[in-house]
Image (cartoon, rainbow, N blue to C red; front, side, top):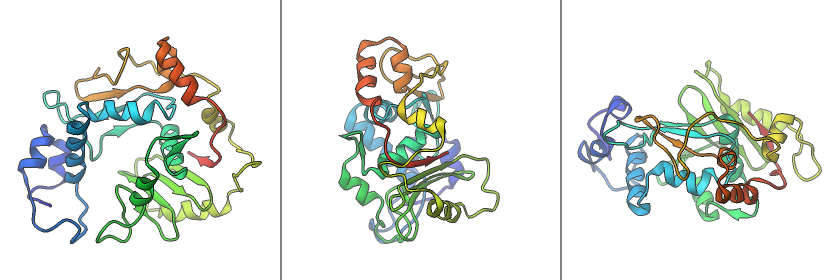
Length: 269
């Protein structure tokens, strides 16, 4: 698929569904040539909407955010109030610790404390080279010798190295001209073995993954499901804020899914 527009259209367009369907054209068979663009995520978002009958944000909250025991609410920017479609290519906003949990989920091949949240086969496929691409899978960038990473705009990364059992998250407003994947790979080589018996050195990270504290997010949300408080974004509820809300079902969910032994991995944010 090739677009007659550019990134500005997907960043600032007010009806991204229409843009993806009407302002693009098929120019060659899928898998013929790798081309990174913002339209494929939009098409995937529409597929999810039609297959599940709910918004992408609500589906994420139900299938990942709460089962992972996310410590903070997240948000997903929308194209416009009228359209109400998530900006699939760029608009997901969350705290570093919860992005780290997504990294650990993939490090554990889709399994979170005994529950398979993402099919193991999909984790393997999505972190392997896609057709006509050597360094890109399905939404993951691939590094030599096994590590893979999510790469956001302005130097944001979730780096996953299964060989060293390491997840590294970096936020920023720019990459500073640094080859961060190489830095992460070198750092992973130097970190201590995190497998059973090893000690996670950062107390804040240990507490976070052990769910030793409840955090007040200060965000209003409805009793169940993601909420559109701001007409330009969805709010995605976390396990901790659901527990604070006093909902018995959410509390049981948090107790069952958010507690227990911390995952075994070195996590750096």
